[in-house]
Structures are given as C-alpha cells and as structure tokens.
Image: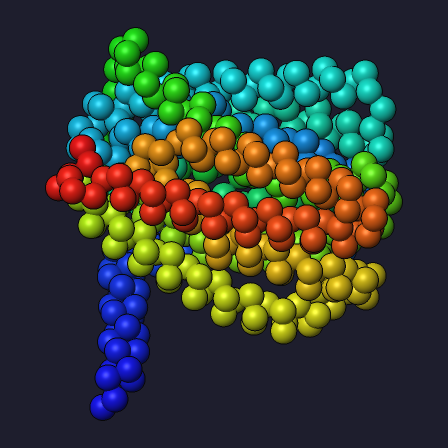
Amino acid sequence: MHPKFQKSVNMVKKLWKSIIDLIKGGILYILTGSVLANAITMISSVVIARLIDKAEYAALAYADNFYGYITLASGLGLSTAMLKFAAVSDSPKERSKYFNYSFVCGGTFNLSLSLFLCVIVTYIQLPFENAKKYIYLLCLYPVLQNILNTISSYLRSSLRNKEYAVVGIIQSVVVCILSILCVIVVGAAGIISARYTGILIALILGIVLILKKEKLYYREHLNHSEKKHVLATGISLMFANLFSGMMPINESFLINNIIQDEIITANFKVAGLVPSQIYLITSALAVYFFPVVSKLTRVQDIKKTFYKAGIINLGIVLICTLVGLIITPVLIRLLYGPKYEDAIPISYMLWGIRGMNAGVRMLPMNLLPALGKVRFNAALAMISTLVQFGLDYILIFLYGIDGIIYGSTIVYLVSGIAYWLYFIHVCKNWEGNDTIL
C-alpha cells in the first residue's frame, strides 16, 4: 500500500476510534437529547407559526429578543463557573457549596435584570407595541432558567450525561404539547404559560434525579475567598457568554429596529430556525468535553483532546451544513407553508454564517474556560461583538438584510482563528512542564 494512502487510512481509523470513545463516554446521550429537544421545539414553532399571524409572532419574537440578552447574562455566569470548580471535586458537600451560591446569587441577579427591563419598556416606545405584554409575562422566566442551568451544571459536573439529557427532553415535550394546546384555546399568550409549566417540571425532575444518587447539602456555603474566586470566574464567563451570544441576537435586533418591517422580522426568524440547529453538534461536544478537559493536568493530554474535538466538530459541521443547504427549501415549504417561501434565500445565507461560527469559533471559545482561561475569552468576545454590531449596522444600510451576512462572516472567521491561536500560545507556554497544576 502506498505510504500516503496508508497514512490517510490510519487517520480515518484514529478518527473513527475517537468517535467510538465519545459514544462510550456518553456523547450520544447529550447529542440525542439536544437533537430531540430542539426537534420538539421546532415542531412547536412550526405549528405556532401556522396558528398565529405574522404580527403577533413578530411581537413575541421581539420580546424573546430582549430576554435573550438576560439569558446570556446567565446569572453572573455562576452556573458555568460552578461546573468548572465542581467538576474536579468528588465530594457532594463541595459541589453543594457551588450549587447553593449559583442558585441564590445567580437567581437574584437575573430577577433584578428582568424587573429593570419591565420598568424600562413601560416608558419607551417599541416598534411592536404589542410586545410589552409578553415582556411583562416573561419577567420570572430568567430566574427559573438560572435555577435550571445550575441543576444541569451539577449533573454535568458528576458526568451524569444521561440525566442531563432527560431533563432537557422532558422540558421540550411539555412545552411543545402545551404550547399547541394553549395557542388553540387562548392564543399566543398561551405560549408563555406553556414555557413556565415546562421549566417548572424540568426543575422538579432535575432535583429528583440529583437526590436519587446523592444528597444536596443546603446549609453548606463557600467561604469569602472561595466566593471571590468563583465570582471573578463567573463574571468573566458571563461577559464572554453575553457578548458572544449577543452576536446572533444583535442581528435580529438590528433588523427589527433599522428595517422595522414585520414581514422581514418574521421571515428572518423562520429562516434561522433550521440553520441554527447546526449549533447542536458543537454544543453537544462542548458539553461533553468541558468537564473532561477540566480534570486534565498534562499538557499533551489537553492538546490531544482539544485537537480531537476540533477535527470531529469541523468534519460533522461541514457535512451537516452541506446537507442543510440542500434540504432547506423542502423543509421551509413543508413545515411553514407558502407564506414563508420568501424566507428561503435568507436561510441559505444563514447556513453559511452559522456553519462558520459552529465549525471554527464555538468549540475553542467554550473549552478555553475549562483551562481557566476566561479573561481572554471575555475580552475577545466583547471586541468581536462590538465590531460585528458596527459592521452589521453600516452594511445593513448599504446592502439591506444581506449586510448581516457580510459583517457576521468576517467577524466569526477572524475571532475563531484568534481563539485557536490563543490556545496554541497557551500550550507553548506550558510546554516543558509535566503538568499545568
């Protein structure tokens, strides 16, 4: 056999072995759970889009857009910080300390932001005035979401991937069924009731699953030094998550407020629903690898794990993006009907930027905090968001909705390369040391 061909065969074998190892480690639970949860959510959105008119759908989308920013604040990032610190501990008492801190402080922070938003929108004019009622109704949802994030992080820190996936699936099933029923009975406002019911059931189930295998110590608390360390990490993670997650939300915000067309707003939301599913792949890999990377201490093990995850992620994302481009017209016509046919060209463009983000940028951005590298993440995320917002703002005026594609593509690609270069730089600094801890 030719040496080059043999080398290619060996690479394929290694990649296949890596995938098998991931499956044995529980990646299928995470991926299957994410796919099912999002598929159920999409089914719900399809039915709802058919049952309510575009104006009402746009009002709800506008309210969700605002709360998307609060969700990204993620309770000062404490649930993610908890995962970083709790993952290296085998003691339920230690994990409970981080759980309690995230539960109380993160929830208080999210509630304060929600109340502030409600006060602000009371005194300002919105492009879609009907969105105000949805903003008021959703006021408590970010608090409950922070609690659910904390429960999910606790399960992930114990590598209980199956239970983590089950909670997400159950929540999605409940929200899907109740959303459809409530929309038929009381209209679009029924979606809010369905969301609250779904998240409350998920919270109860999550607590039950935790207590089934270990005890939560509600009276255990972090000392002042531990709180300071966790809070500093959490705030850095919050800023990284906030600014990074703001990027796709900003796209909708700019379209809503510059173009101010209900038809275009609804079309953009529908056009992005299928391409955004590509994030399931990268998110599942990040969820799986984060606690794994957190436990590693040898530089070579870290490099091997990062590169393996990156290659697998990029390969799967490229394949899924190509398939998505082919089936998008059929899916939109089948799922949303002829009234959303004009969303197909927008969907093509969104496949490109979502695939770029998922394939190049998201994985290193999500895994670097597992190594304690949170400040660089926060700084680059902030810079990327500001640059993207400015570019998109200018390019929308020049090219209309196409401007979003040009600006976001540039920023996602450049920032993604920067994350990988920083990881290489970190590893070079650690080389020569047997361990990093």
